[in-house]
Length: 437
Ligand code: NIG
Ligand code: FE
Image (cartoon, rainbow, N blue to C red; front, side):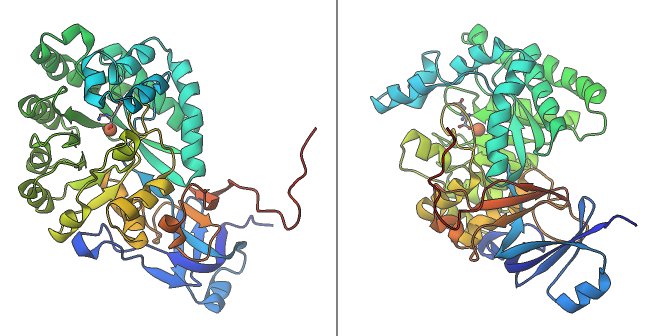
């Protein structure tokens, strides 16, 4: 007998297709909702989407079926900004911040990012893979099917490459897909504190050219990684950021930037000018910079886990970004300093409360627009024929439970490239007080 090559997902309450491409401005939040919608998957791809049960049964008579049990089916979340690879933790700094020290004060006194740099430099690729795997797994179980992952805790050529090796190695394990970013310009390394321009020169004249050749040898079939810069007081100023990103652009790298997290240095407008894929953080962004972004295809990526993690009150001006017709996405910024959060569902809940997004807007910002922020929106981020079969089956019938509820994982099954991963035991019908002795 021929194996069933089709998988039919049926009995959904709401199928959120997010079809039609990245969503700009007030158009954000168009879910492409089909009540009782169905999806047919062939191998790793989506073959058909619709709602006519009879016609699907006729067209795909041999399909195996997956009963969504009256729940929401939607695209897998895409997390377009994480620093998932690091060694150690910074619980002690969390305590210091609660006692009054600021994030930038800790960084300037050699802690912060630099303390994770020390731990990461001392770790082997195998250590990093094993410390990162649990975080990747938890993100996946919360519904993130693809994540961007940055280097930036090495700050020497060898240790930055070690982080890239970790990303490639963990990504090759699957099913979680990882999209790499080189963030050699994450902080000024201790060796260059007195001569920051020399480190900028090192990145431009040695690290980036080396990376091109390294990538061709180690990942010849994959697009070049993004190049990112932390443009901030105490890290890289606007001129230094421009120099690094321009050099990266000449070499053919796609670009990203960390901009306006604590201060408005002009990084967002620089991203728009250079055609970066995204400008991220954007807490202190000025209206002219928001307008510059909105005129470009650069996606504004907001990271509400970061002010929340730092106990701060200012969040990205999402309403202004949308009012000016910008492209808005959301990400976790998973990192050991400001936002150790592996759940994009929690980010949705924050964005609804702190940035005034509706659940539908936050869902679009974590699927199709997030895919656009890592230039993968032709492959992932929506449920459309020809796209990769990356789907979630939630344990709720109403998509608004994303955002409304928080602290609970609402994903019960993940379909990644056509394979089904149950991530949760269903709640028991009767008593759950049975332990194992
Ligand atoms: O995006 N702001 C710079 N980088 C990270 C924080 C990294 C860290 O503190 O380790 C961020 O928030
Ligand atoms: Fe970041």
